[in-house]
Length: 246
Image (tube, rainbow, N blue to C red; front, side, top):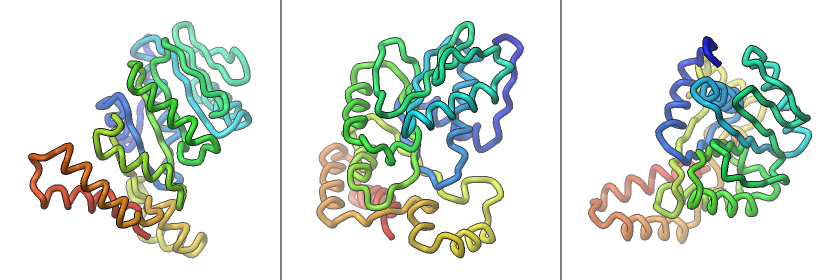
């Protein structure tokens, strides 16, 4: 890998710093935020630093094969070899692109990436597996997804990111976090996709939480962080719930 150079965009640098800061990350992003290309860039940069083994999870087998081919083409200069329809290897590193149906765990996996996580058909099964992994492995786990409107299981997972119930650090990337997206872009997309779809898929807003779920979230915060002032707790609750208010 000596002598290889990759120059990420400022947006990619920002996101990859987030990846580096925490072992477990959950990125909730607007549609078309170039998360996949950022994930590819992150893997490639890690390959430069050291030998790594990566598992990259996607919707299905067809998508996994396509992503494997794309990665192989994008980073040919790494002296990569396509070992199979869903595996790319260099002399030192191995990257598997897998369907979420093929969920497997290995002790030697350095990085696990779950792309468009909220849209997996077997979401509950994968979530249980990730929860176990985060507690007993040292693998870096990166969850990236757009919002799936009205999908309560992901909503619960997201709320838990703000407490000690899981180790994931939550980050939100709204539509205007991508360079070049301005009010003209917003107005054009609103005309094309409608208000409801726009709020869900681009503003990272989904189904409004029930009063009971918000109350429970606040109770957990008070129990976990008794030293925090009431106004701070209220502020955290607003920040968390605002992203799910239509």
